[in-house]
Image 1 (tube, rainbow, N blue to C red):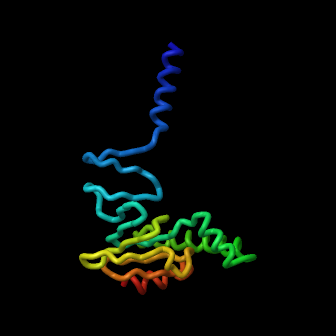
Image 2 (cartoon, rainbow, N blue to C red):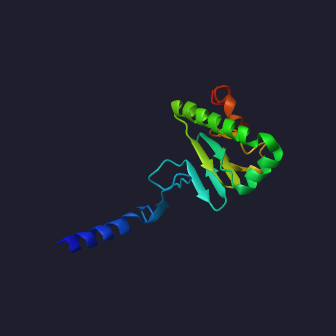
Image 3 (cartoon, rainbow, N blue to C red):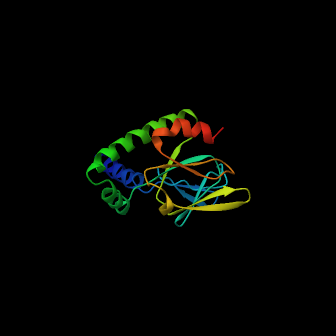
Length: 162
C-alpha cells in the first residue's frame, strides 16, 4: 500500500510541476507574471506578438532591465549606480502602490516595440528612444503616451488621466 501511495504521489508531483497553461477555446495562454496575452474571454488589454506589445487600454509600463541596459546605466551613472537603482526601486514600488489605489497596474515589459492604439491605428513606441529605461510610460486610451519619472507619479497621473 505504501508503495502504491508513493508512486501515486510521485506522479502527482511530476504532473503538478509542469508548465502552467490554460486552454481557452483552442488557444493556449501561458500564465506568467510578465506576459499577458489577449484571448476572447478577457478584456483586450495587452497583446504580445514577437517583440511588439500591443496596448489599447489605460496602462502604465515599466521596462525590464536586461544585462545590456544595466551595463549602459552603469556607464551613465558610474559611482552612483547602486544608489540610483535603490532609489528607483523604492519609487517604482511607491508608484505601484499609488496606481493600485487608482485601479491601474504597472506592467513590466521587455519588448523592444510597444504599439499604442490611438483611434483606429497603432502608434509605435521604440523602447530605445526613451529618455531613461528607469522611467515609466503612461498610456491613456486614444491619447499619446507620456514618459514620466516614478517619483512624480501622483502629479503626472492627475495631469495625464484627468
